[in-house]
Length: 197
Image (cartoon, rainbow, N blue to C red; front, top):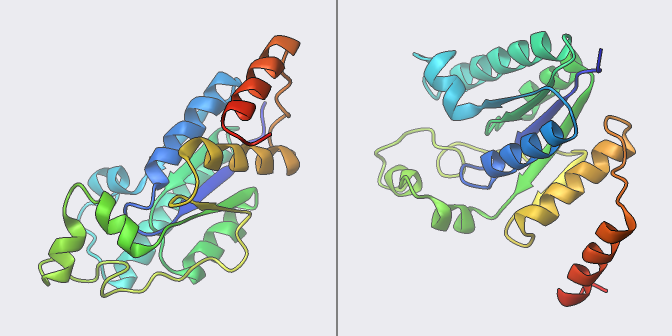
């Protein structure tokens, strides 16, 4: 049986966590892994319905996510979480329980997150219509030693994805992708066209 592990995306609302989580899932499925995504919004609708946004409720929400991740992971499934998870202490709890845990900090300035916010949540929070909104009137504690930092205001989603895949290869969770000579040429040409080489 494949060994399960968890990739834990954390970051401000609208920083790009769900986008990267889905891209990573697609890539890992292509490589033959069984993968489940635990998206913060979906978990709140189904597993954490009734919880609010106080620190206690947020911590309880994250505990539920990491408990489900633990059950999946021990059965050989790769778990990808995409939840704000704003507090360091609770992320540390997740790391200690899950052990095979790769923290990805989706770093993005709050001003950029606000511009990406199609639901208008930041505007509502600034008007006081939403209380305890992370990044406005509730703190986000940046990870101190994440395995990967994706700066989504400076990198394309594809560049961020490559960073994550390289780290998973380096940590031994996935095999390095081997390209055919033809694929190597296509990649080289693309990189040349983009001015990287």
